[in-house]
Length: 198
Image (tube, rainbow, N blue to C red):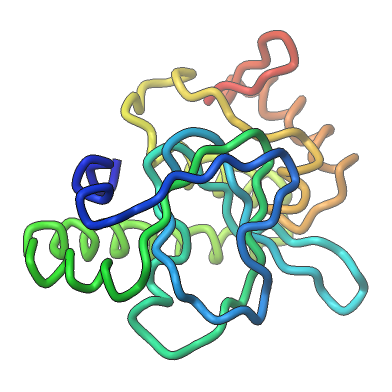
């Protein structure tokens, strides 16, 4: 949990319940709220000029959503959509800034969190420029596993479908399916009841 829910609520935060496929904000909207996921999953995505969806991140319990845009005067470059029933905490930008001013330790935690996300995002971007699908897929899986509490082998259940992995890596779904099978044979990952574990 990035910021304790009790602290957010003490500053006037509200809790919203979202249905699957419900939009939180759209690309081009102006950031006005701090969002933190209490329970559920949200995807950040962009549609290219050909109408193909590119998933740039999938966020889950405890993650904040595009909080860095509250510090600059830019519009959202992505859309945020719930990909399962999701409970989200919202706090106005003004109250969020006051919370940070009055709690410098939270500000340091956010800087640390943003730095880690940015570091792994760079690694993922490097992997996504590879012509080899296994490098792209490994990069995406390792990026998401890096936020898990248990980093031991096969402990992380990948929360994506093969189609979502394709949208994250810019590959075709068929390529992802073939590569996942290859990585299983190489003992990089395990498949149990169609779920991927790394």
